[in-house]
Length: 360
Ligand code: UDP
View 1 (tube, protein in one colour):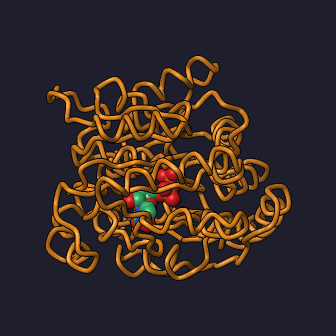
View 2: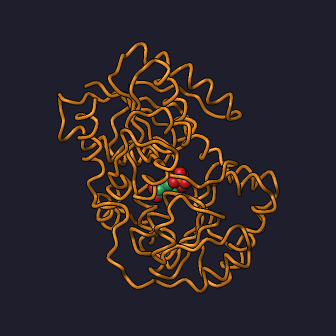
């Protein structure tokens, strides 16, 4: 079977690494995967470093489409992916998550009657102002195979009347965390490089448009991180979008007590996650990784697509309120272990490969 996989953004490289590894090791000559990189994330630290470190095959196509407003970016991707589909004639198109690359891939394939498989189907924030929410709802609607990471995601699809082709396979990022956790401990020297002691620092990330594009929210977040940096080291790998906004708003000076670093390679990032005292983030993936590594998390959003992390006591929603963020971090504690495994048993990638073969 010929599978065309479309990726474009950092979290998709990590998810695709998990599935591609299984395809290459367990299905050689059975599933032929052609990788298309839209170019949505293009700089070395947000893209190439992941291909090298996570051993992802080089994309056969790099569409080099980045920047611009959402409509223009998605439109250009749609046009280019349609050409690739016509040229390659795949049996299936595989997309991950909720970016513009996900939507463009799904839509281009559906219009050509190429079956679409969506990994991370069924996630909902119920906030239609998020570009990601629009992308996921539309991608799910045109997908033939809906690989859900959780029971909640399955229930969300059922509530929308989507019941065909739905399966709960578990979370591919949990697979990735199992595969890379030991490697990060052995290979990463990031703690030493940044002069950090285990359990004594806060790791922060911030890049959601709802925070970076709203000066009031961004300012409150910056104040919270600056205040926390008075108590203990705070490390903030800066997403390019956040870096640009901070510079444009002249907010860099407010962060002088915070350790600002470039976006980190994956092993360094998860090494920092594993031994943080607390993680503060607006990222979907980082919330879950905090849970996987049993580190308390404070989420700088008003809702989450991963409610299990909150229900099990590992994650607190603090919105973009300076006071709530600071209090939640200073009070963060590990809850009692529950033994519950909402993200599957580490076999999601295997189940996806099997699902592709058996259903198409
Ligand atoms: N990540 C990374 N380096 C960084 C920040 C994040 O490798 O400097 C990883 C992180 O460990 C997680 C993924 O990127 O696996 C999350 O991606 P991101 O926060 O960009 O997107 P989201 O999950 O919110 O869609």
